[in-house]
Length: 200
Image (tube, rainbow, N blue to C red; front, side, top):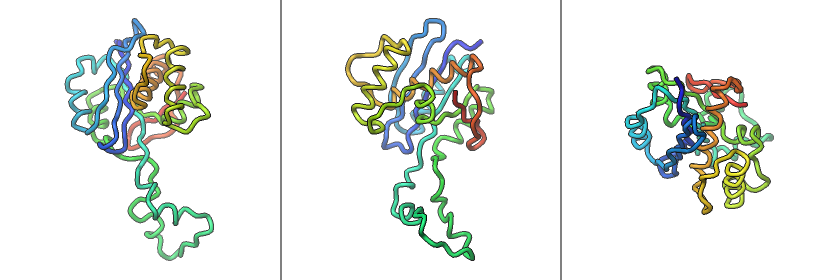
């Protein structure tokens, strides 16, 4: 029987914080919210989480940081000519990969153990849930809007008044999406490294 939903906002690297949130379905309250950094921290969370078999887990897809390097900016120009005889140059070093593969092995191992685990794209999910603001993504104003919306429109009244880290707020969105999956209100939009990516 599913008793909890778990949302994880996975960062593209250990230098950026990841967020985890656990919601109890019966009371509709958050029982655990935390920041994690390395994959060892995330593995430790799963190792010590006693309701793993009774939970639905939604993990966000982190963007691949290599999209920000100079090679992407040059080669993504629409007017840039690429010699068709050098096919391996077009996607050299996998620079067109949008999402990071960080954590995929851990999540696949959990799936093989029978854990109900899916992925989600945070920005698409925010749009579907009407949680998308007009402010720059992850800016202070955007975070304030997201925290207020989660508190007043989604009933998380126990959220603090002071600003929470954005990773934790995004993890809370994962708990909402996981519960919607339990109610069969989600659909698969694509598959990433063997795990389905869902949205409303």
